Length: 209
Image 1 (cartoon, rainbow, N blue to C red):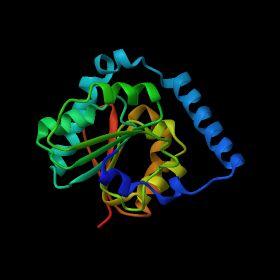
Image 2: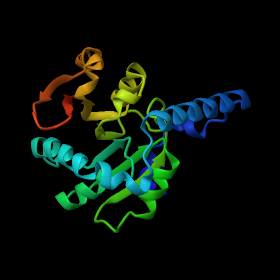
Image 3: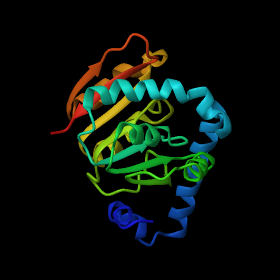
């Protein structure tokens, strides 16, 4: 684990917890992982083939608008690390941290991570309880994940660990969640929505400056 990564991990991670508290956290993580696998599970070997091209198009939509004017990025729900590969090709040279609750995907991402000109780390973590310090990242992204989460908890966490920019995309077929998501994110930052008729997602950019 590199020095920078250790520096952004929340002090809470190192605090001694009661056995009951530890068991409760493990139970919640296992429950979330079980629900995730039940409704959205895709074998890691087929993830790139099934979602790769679609995800890359989403990255292009966002970063053609934002550019690469940041040095520390958190990818929430990183899967097998597709965003890390895209950023490499785009010329990013900062620090990338990918988190996902699925151990197999994180393992696959680490195994298939190629040498890059920037720091890459992958962490197994729950998006509702991110193990990072407040405002640890200049930009935090969540591509097509929020519909699987408790929006209140997830949005609160992503705002907590972000300094400048937040990117959240939501499946258009989950129109039922769109209004709630907009209400949550507009309370805290200046929000803009990127229009793209071809994409299956809504794109929200939140500026915290």
